[in-house]
Length: 71
Image (tube, rainbow, N blue to C red; front, side, top):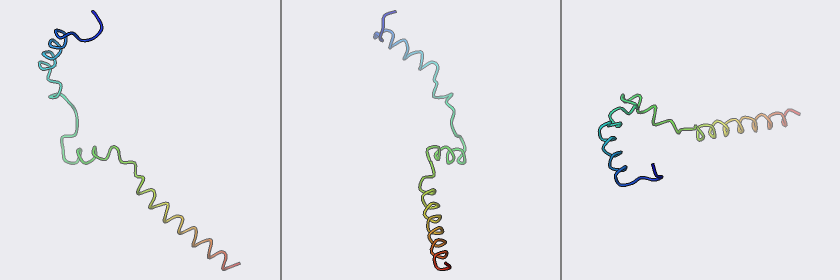
């Protein structure tokens, strides 16, 4: 078979895909809970981590100032 898709090969493949109907067999979330959960797949938590880091830095700054006052 030659490289590439001839018009005949393209038509044959198109007909086969229409017979197979892979979109009917696709997996994915079916429930609202599953859809919500899968919508968070790309969430990395970066904003949440930044907020935690900001609080930790403020806490350490307060501790450093307290130690300076004690000495």
